[in-house]
Image 1: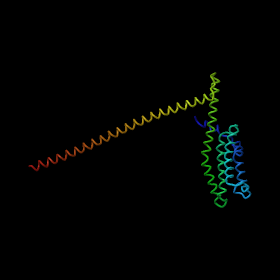
Image 2: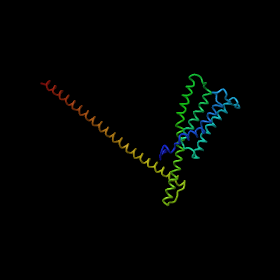
Image 3: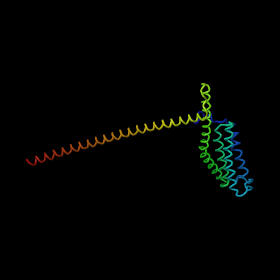
Image 4: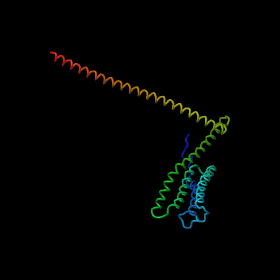
Length: 239
């Protein structure tokens, strides 16, 4: 089964997606950065209780959990599609790294460019993980739609409408059969490969034997020729 039957199946319209990404990731992330970030002199970070580092970690971790949770809620409410997981989680990760870099690196000279490069690298590293989550959620949606289609088809044909459990059992049975088929095909391939290897080995052995035979024949001819020469020399010597 294809995870994406059609790209539009998991793509939210741009402005709608941007609106929800703002709620899920951008606005809370920027608020944390502006209010508690180390890049600004007016930050309230020093008002945090001690240990300050533990509270900052808790806030950033909660921000990440919030992004995932609220995105999942909006997704299950069908307010947007699965692609928002990719955008919101990636943006949240970048904003978290931006906050951490504010602690470690000052905004002076070329260090700003270094920050940008680090955030870019983080985005590239996080993106596959975010896409994977998008694929998983979209895959769940596709399976649900397939179940509904199967139920609807059974209803139209006047058949017994299968339950979700029955459909899952049928899907699992199909999976087992496919695995068995793949296993059989693999065994056939191995057998075919072994036969080809044996044939190749036999051909090589035949070639080697033929080569050895040819060499032996040449040596025999050479030896015979040498023997004739010696016999001729001996006969001339006797005369």
